[in-house]
Image 1 (cartoon, rainbow over the protein chains, first blue to last red):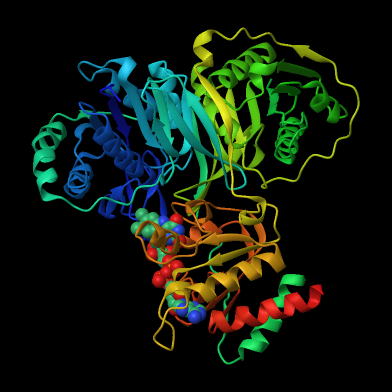
Image 2: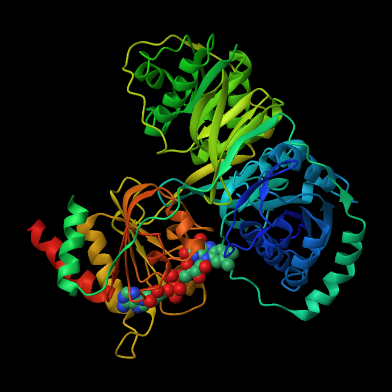
Length: 269
Length: 346
Ligand SMILES: Cc1cc2nc3c(=O)[nH]c(=O)nc-3n(C[C@H](O)[C@H](O)[C@H](O)COP(=O)(O)OP(=O)(O)OC[C@H]3O[C@@H](n4cnc5c(N)ncnc54)[C@H](O)[C@@H]3O)c2cc1C
């Protein structure tokens, strides 16, 4: 492989999924209760995209990874303390809300502008990565809009595998219905890939990688451009928790045979 | 006045999938509730006439089609060009489409191209005082919102399984052909195939009545201090064979594979349910050897009846996440369940 890729990973932060989330109405529309206090993590599918990007650079010498992230600066900084130890990247930070209730099209505009402003960007080497859905809005819409704004029309979503051939062509596996994958061949960069889980385990923390990354992470956070997301034309009539809890019947003292009978009856009903 | 476009793609055999009829039902719901609105249909595929005919009795006033070999494959560039052309020809203000993998890949991009907006994973449409409103979930099925939008065109991608399918009958539809000349730049990608497990190894069955979920407990040390992975594998396979259930899993169990531990050979990330897995729709779900933590159970949002077998009476399922929790050894229970089901069959 001779191409030195420019791999841009778009990924923001989301509340740790082990937290209980509760919607509230804020001045700018719906929000999460104590949003700024909730511990955050890098959005899971975007983090898979980041690990896949880093892995790709190992096989394509000279390649470089940028992480473009729009979120509240202070929270981004917290999350970067761990993420920066995982794999090498250069951070491009945008200071703004990371709420799931923000508008995908507005987020996409901010991300595309930030990507276009990266010095020395070369479309023929460009791979734009992201998660195929966020854990916040969960829409799977932002990346396509980023791609459109950058003029990239070779786009793939739910990607579990990317293989690059010697001639620079890409073979991509995307999740489709019924537990299957669609296999596509693309002539080469530029392309946009929204990653699902992929095949890589989470990299172990590496303090050395962290030290190198932090040299660019801190200045990037300091100069993070403020972004306003107005949510124009979008109005939420309600946001509510599901009619929660079921009344769980706890069956403790039945034999395995009795339980099996009950389950079979239930299945057949 | 809204022009509501049902936008669907055909299947490989030229037919319309059930998800397309569900989207048509949603489109029709909006059409009925929005005074003065009109309903039109747009179809993309290698051939679209048969699909149009199959719903010709629906009250759509016009049919638009983009057809040809280039539009047989599920590919961003050609699908975007086709969808864009149909939306323009139809002058659509609201585009209702099934949230299939094919449309989910491309329609948000088309919304961007047309200066509109897109909402995906929509689970309901309604009339909010003369304006269309939709509902969808946020934070991985943790909270549900209802919203409206001022921008047009508004793309509404309806989640398959969330609506009843429209039952309008067949007839002969007059399809207006929309010509799309694909530039070479739209052909840089080619779909070369589908990769799937062999029929008997395919454990994901979206149409199954029952979702059967396996958790990490199946690989843990049991009362005798030993693990029993081969037996777990046999019991799970056996159950899937006799019940025809769809197999889901917790993250912990599918992740074991990546960490090089002994693991159930037929599981992959595609089976994972939850926060970073899927949120399937089945009438019933049975969880085994899984703790029922929130990042897992958010994937159960659309499972109606839920039962669980766990050794831990204080697991997540006990706390309002299941209808019934059996505090028992899943090995013993499933062994018997398999026996009973096999006996019923023979
Ligand atoms: C960012 C993030 C994303 C995540 N996404 C997901 C996701 O998408 N899906 C997901 O599932 N998890 C997800 N998780 C992980 C989640 O929090 C839990 O760790 C995971 O679901 C636990 O899996 P488990 O219940 O199978 O395993 P365990 O917690 O190990 O539970 C095993 C259970 O098996 C029971 N058991 C053992 N032996 C038997 C027996 N013989 N009979 C009956 N019961 C038995 C035990 O009592 C126990 O309750 C995520 C976590 C994070 C941080």
